[in-house]
Length: 235
Image (cartoon, rainbow, N blue to C red):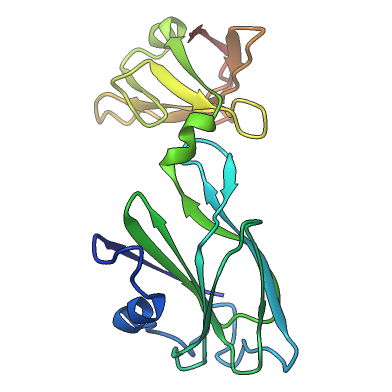
């Protein structure tokens, strides 16, 4: 399947018919397969069904919420609209997927912005979880600010610039739990000047019980000793 994402901000109201929206946008590229599927893939059967879950994902963590009211649109092979429905209160949908059905679109309004995503050449069955990021759910995330000290790094790697999660101007990272644990933060060292030095990278694993992390800077073929980085949590 190939996904086509369309973002349309401030163009439609909540009462605007999705038939009009999809008609105005158009579903270009329908009938063509993705790199790993043939153009003939897709289509259902006389009694075919398509099931799945529509959710909103928090932008900062893995918290989800059923995306009630998401518009579900079924397209024929040429992109024209075959049927339309809305996701019920459970967030789960179970719709007919007849032989004329080839492409699937879902439309979500997030912060007054309309997001339309289309999946091409869909076959009947369980499509899995679909949905977009919604920062309104971030308040439900379990996040903590961490302060880092890189004194050992600066001592051992003079002439390098330290990047914490891609930023070289901060020593603080706001980290949100994923699956109940803090994910590692990324550490990158690049030469401050173009003098042929090697760049390094590592991941720092965070724990609450032991506010110190041991990590190894790669490339691993260099016999780089384990380094220490101290961090503290801000409440």
